[in-house]
Length: 126
Image (cartoon, rainbow, N blue to C red):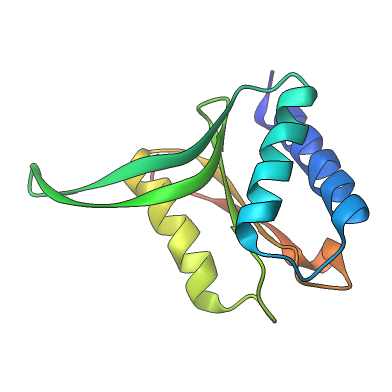
């Protein structure tokens, strides 16, 4: 399945979760619901995937967690905030760089206009 096909299914799942639950819940609720919806669509999903930070070939023992990894290709970062900020975009871009993934989707469920709060972010360094 291509990235575009997977992205289409991800967007479909995001809208299904949003239309069912609405805005204003915790990120953890949307994460669980979205993972379930993606799995129901036949996609391979991992939740809270550890991301290591390597500095000059040394693992710093620090790390982050990607909310959802789909098909070992696409990272989904979930927010439930008043407004997406530039730091949220940078966070996902850093996750993409650290994992060598090409595509990420940033979504804010705490909105009344979901279309404007789903953002595709491309890692140009793969």
